[in-house]
Amino acid sequence: MSLFNNKKDDLKEKAVKASKEAISAIISKDMYVTGEISFKGKARIDGTVEGNVKGEYLVLSENGKIKGDLILDSLVCHGSIEGNVDSKLVTAQSTAQIVGKLVAANLTVESGARLEGEIQAASNQKKTEIKRPLQPAQADKKP
Image 1 (cartoon, rainbow, N blue to C red):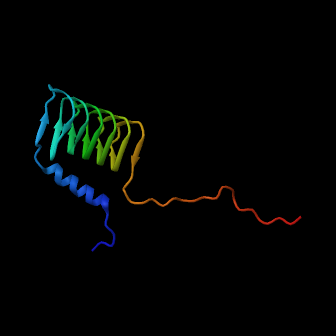
Image 2 (cartoon, one colour):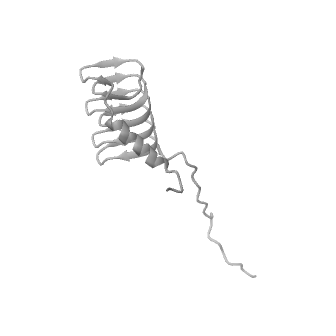
């Protein structure tokens, strides 16, 4: 029995479960989509999307390109993204290129991946701030 609920473990379990599900939608490498995409379940993009993407579990292949903002539960990125990413779980593979603000509760980055922009990777748990003195304590001096 666990004393604390570990949200990172819950996210990983959900990602593993979703990765085993069948892909419900595919944008092939020969397709170019302009406009907003919204989906449920698992989707794979091998082609190019110019527009915002909102959904649950997305796999962006090495050939896949997205120019727009993403709001997802889980992202496995092998391709390139030019836009902001907001996802609970992000895995940037070695071929990934993400340019823009990246916000993730759990972020995994393989060696070789290129991330450019502001990155916020932390759980939703409240962080305790470490307070440090501005100057070291000095001994009392007597005149």
